[in-house]
Image (cartoon, rainbow, N blue to C red):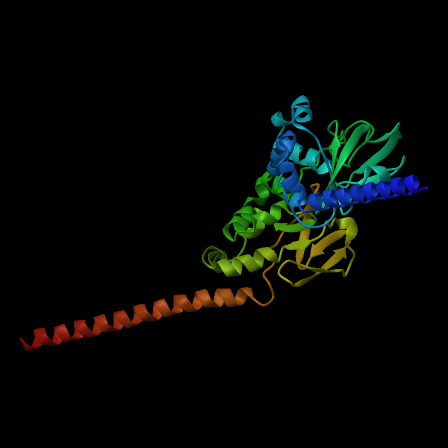
Length: 348
């Protein structure tokens, strides 16, 4: 009886020790972000490089929850990712990130479905002891302070876009930057974005641009165009007036709907005989789609209501009038001098 008691006590002590060790291990892992974990494990050096190239570092560095299905350098080399365009790398890496949830292999059941960063579905099947995600084995989950990392034995194979027919697959540009830089008709607006340091918005997720065409911008009164060139705060307000948060296609718009733009102003959408208007501007080319955003071309530049175009024109006109007045005064002085000279000649 004494021997049994001693054995039970020893077993209890060992159990307590094991529990303590496990708790310490999980706490240690929780101290690191996914970015820190990936950076300190050399087998993921290429994965981190591609995450950086794709502009997705925030998705492994920021607080929150997500699951990253990382692949090793050997997988990256076998797939030939290094030779792909940046847009394709960005697409592939986005396929390997599931935002908003920490997924454990023990919780992955046959038939489960998860939505990745590119809004595509990832399907789980169980074969033997381990799960498959889109037919790729995944394992070795690691906990971090901002998510879970699982190791994928291959790169996920997903369509290039959600627009698919029975015969063809349409490749959507990744973001609004890709859309705008491919179309010369929108080049003036890109110049404006660059001038006011807002080009980072071109890479944003869930964003919609109502872009005046080059023709619309060129048709502005000369005083307004001069104001664009020399008044950066004014130009920045105008640019923000054309950008709205959210992935908004014409299917999402209704007559009388009010959109709040990045300037904080409200713009009313109207629909007349099937033609859509953003404020007073007609949407001449709707629904140019990227994976992360939407561009609608409009035929007019919308100046914010609190900066009337007339005020800009008035400032320029006032300046011109002042110059003219000054010139007139100068002429008068000259006439007076001439008169004095004539008198002198007469006296002589």
